[in-house]
Figure 1 (cartoon, rainbow, N blue to C red):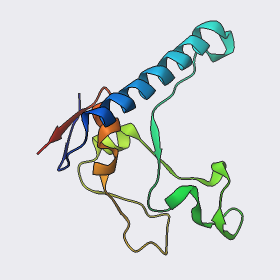
Figure 2: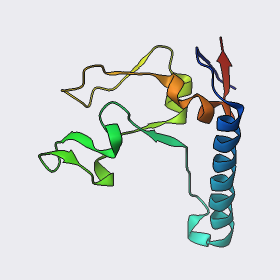
Figure 3: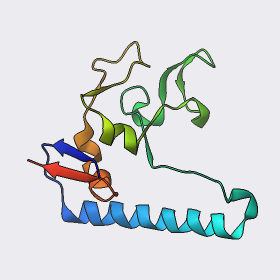
Figure 4: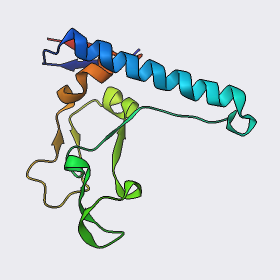
Length: 123
């Protein structure tokens, strides 16, 4: 089990909700894997859209489509749960040349991290 230290207070309801969503998604995916033979070897992991380069669900500048404000899902940048939990230092997004700050504040994901198999220590 990985430990992630964050200085944040979050509502127990937030953790309960996040945990319920995660469990429901896991049940759906496991059910699909068991019922559909072509998905037997499927792997999945919880990921979060990058709050730096995809703020508001929009890519600041898309190199693929060469335009500002791209909304195509295939252009989004995601961070996996394991990347957040295995990070030894602050996480920085290097995909946005125009972002004021490239540092990702993991505290905003605390309810999701606490509801996962990973442990979050709050100070």
